[in-house]
Length: 115
Image (cartoon, rainbow, N blue to C red):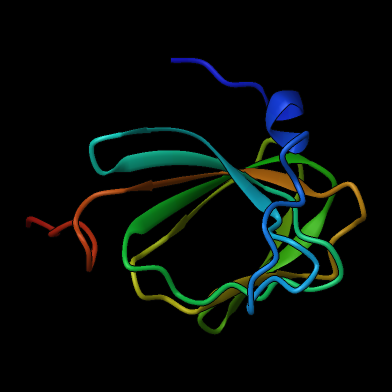
């Protein structure tokens, strides 16, 4: 499977919802089993809530800060971040051109950690 960010950007903004009054700022590229890949390009505010699956962010373009629980991280193109299922997180102070891949996978509640 293959998808390009430029193709997905043509689908943003998406439908207007209560959480996204100016239209959804993400578009799904593909899905396979529990895994899905999306492009996320927030503007003005990142209203996302904790997700029920583990997720990875791969920063494509722009800059931002990412708050995961109580830890703050600078985001630049080429950076990758892991967010466990259920963790509070959001991007803020992001540039107008900020874009990131998001990969969700695994069972609700996140992967079981084996010791």
